[in-house]
View 1 (cartoon, one colour):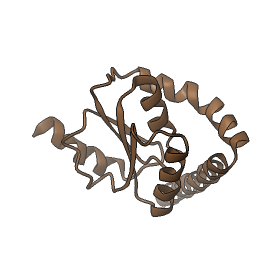
View 2 (cartoon, one colour; view 1 turned 120 degrees about the vertical axis):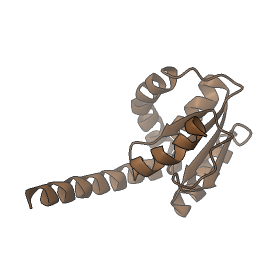
View 3 (tube, helix red, strand yellow; view 1 turned 135 degrees about the vertical axis):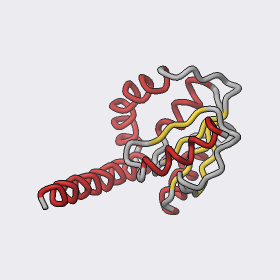
View 4 (cartoon, helix red, strand yellow; view 1 turned 180 degrees about the horizontal axis):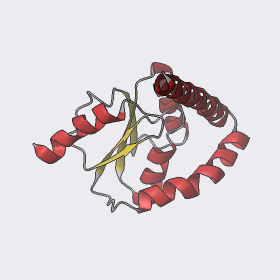
Length: 150
């Protein structure tokens, strides 16, 4: 019984956290002040992750769970000059992200699409970035494993 309560509490906390980040991203895509603030906080963290992978301009990158503000997609395109496809399973997030990418004149380097990480075709991609709020991770990893074991 204790495990079920613990698990439910963790899922609840995770859900609240996802809504908090979605709200911050909504503010960032609509107000440059919040964009600059969020990017100042996120950039060092995301660049650390991005630089831990050897990405070249020839690589095609899939960003699973790009959200309203596809920070990792933006930084990969800008820093590594690689082509990025960001996917999200929320149609509203996709709508906002597409509009924001167009506003930033990054549509030639970043495509935003609706997609599920457990079903999206992955064979053409070289590098995968998975957002922290994406789930079910086990199913996504199994799906991505087709690249390695196929």
